[in-house]
Image (cartoon, rainbow, N blue to C red; front, side, top):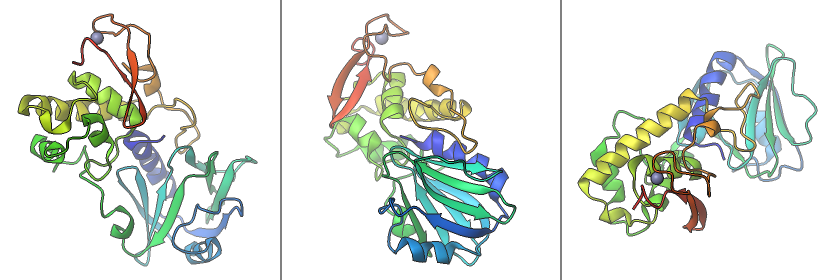
Length: 272
Ligand SMILES: [Zn+2]
């Protein structure tokens, strides 16, 4: 699933490619019934046509395409969604769920194997992203903010890291990587982390996300960037999907357990 580094990579790529372009025609496949939220797909397409993309923003895993006239087109890729900019138009893909023709003849192509992705066209972004927690790479996110998000939560620290209302943008891949980097056991109760451990966790969140961004995200399965290319960070993960392989630090085999229903990878020696 695309997480913060993947969505931010798409945002940066699309910024250079589509800012200033006007949507001339929008089409949503009839088989993508849940793609458009809050209104009929037909109406969404009609409202979008004629609007110019002024700026691309991001909140957590949500991509925000800000349009003239004060509307924002919000996209959440969920599990298998992808937003690819094709200069020659979208290619014939059986997972193509929507296409958006721009005024220079190029197209934005929305592909989604499992059809879980969602789009909105809203005047008030907070209707969709208003309940998200702080941006982990934002300047306002310090160790104190992280401690506040963890305090009083008896849930495992991994579950809190993935709770979008606590911190925005972290999913299963980076939660495992962050906890390894911080040397914290994924099942440890969030509220029981010491101040020092919380500070280490804050440092690890930033380090892991910045490194993954530098690698243009991770492509374990479906993720591709706005040009249809894979990220590179899957080659540099330390624990995610490495169960049975030796820990790079101590050589102990990486273990896989379930935390909050999600597959979780950690080193039983380094993360106690
Ligand atoms: Zn280890």
